[in-house]
Length: 98
Image (cartoon, rainbow, N blue to C red; front, side, top):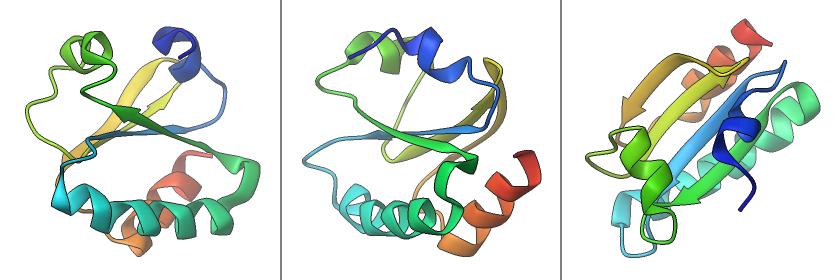
């Protein structure tokens, strides 16, 4: 995986999905994120980070549970939520910050 700090330090919104293969709610969130990505196109990036494969990234963001979604722009955290987040909320959030 590329450097986490480089990934989130973009001039457009970057939504990071901290996830795990064993997590039930993460399996619900995944298709929602796919739909959001197809709606917003290149206005924002959506990155999935598996907490088991990337423990340092998860620790640096103090991830306590999955899924946890964090929105960054220019390296700054703008929004954070744990649990499944619906498509409408995510699309509105990304459009607001793009």
